[in-house]
Image 1 (tube, rainbow, N blue to C red):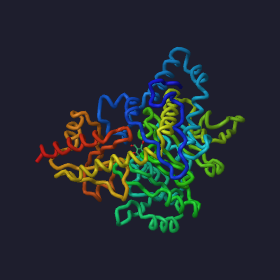
Image 2: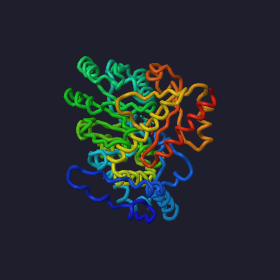
Image 3: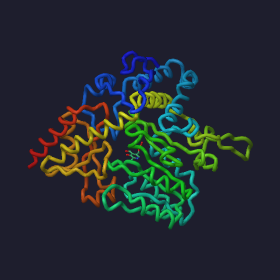
Image 4: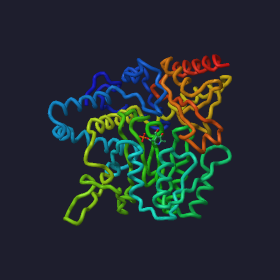
Length: 423
Ligand SMILES: Cc1ncc(COP(=O)(O)O)c(C=O)c1O
C-alpha cells in the first residue's frame, strides 16, 4: 500500500543494498521513524513490552480495511485483499527464516501457545521440561495439564551466575526424563533476561525432543531464525516489538511437526476438510492451527507491521533497542533507593526495578501523570523469579528503537525525582 507520509518513500521500498563485508549497518532515520509514529507526539512510550506504538502505515492499513468492509461487505473486502492477506505469511516467513506454510495467525500469543499445546497427546506421567522464568500463562497452562492429564512439570535450575537457565543441567534433565515437551520463554515478561534458546534447541534436536519457544518479547527486538533456534513450535504476538495491532499473534510450526500429523484438539473447517461423513483430513500447512473466522483488518495490519520491521531492519533494531535499555538501566542503577532487577550478560529492552518508599499503583500513576508509559509486574507474574529477588512488584520500562536518548534521560530524571520525593 502506498503511503506518502511514511518514513519509507513508497511504503514498500527495501533499504539500500548493504556494501560488501564489513557490512556497515544502515543508520536508522530516527526523525522519519518518529514522524511515522503518531504516538511519539503524545507520550514517552516505554511500554513496548506491553504493546508497541503502531506506525502510520500499519494504522492506515487497518483503518482502510475497516472502511472497505463497511463499504463493500466483509467477505467481499477479504476477497479483494486476498493477496495482501497472503503477504502476512510471506512477510513473517521472511522475518523468521521459515516458509509461509509454517505459519498460522492467532488472536494472541497465548492463543497460539494453547493451540500448540492442544496438539500434544499428553499422557499421565509425561514430562514437560521448562524453566523458572517461563511466562505466567504458560506455567498456568502446564499446571492445568497436570490437573487434567497428570503430566509432570520439571523446572530446570537457573545457572548460579545469574545468566538464566543452566543449559547443561537442562540437558541432563532431558536425558533423564525424555520429556514429551521442552518449553522455553526466550525473554520473559517480568525482566530483561534472555534465555539461550538456540543452545537448548541443539540439545532438543540431538535428542529429537519436541521444542516449543515463546518468543513473544523477542520477535521484533532481535533477529529470530527458527532454524538456528531448532524449535518445532514458536509463538509470539504482533503487538509488542513488532508494533502491530492488538488482538494478534502467530504460531510457527516446523515441517517435522506438520509431517508428524500434529493438529490442534479443536480443528475446524478452515484447518481440515470434511471429506466424508465420518472422516476429516487436516490441511497440509500450519493453517490447520487457525480458525475460519479472521479479523482481516488486524491480519492486514500485522502484515504491514512485519513489512515495516523488515524495512527498518532487524539487525539495527537489535543493536539500538537493548542499547537504549542499557543506558536507562545504568542511569536508574545510580539512583538512591532504586534497585534494578535484570540479570544476564546482555539483557533485553525490558528494564525492571523497585523503588523505595512507593507502592505499586501510586508509583505507576505518578509516571502516567508525567506522560511516561510503563507497566507493573507483580509476584503472581513471576513466582520463582520474584521470590528469588525477594520482590512483590516492580515497574517495567521497555523502550524501542524509535525512542530517543533524550527520552531515556527524561525518564531516568523523573524516576530520580520520584525516588527523592519518597525519602
Ligand atoms: C513472554 C510472554 N509470553 C506470552 C505473552 C502473552 O502474550 P498475549 O498477551 O499476546 O497472549 C506475553 C505477554 O506479555 C509475554 O510477555
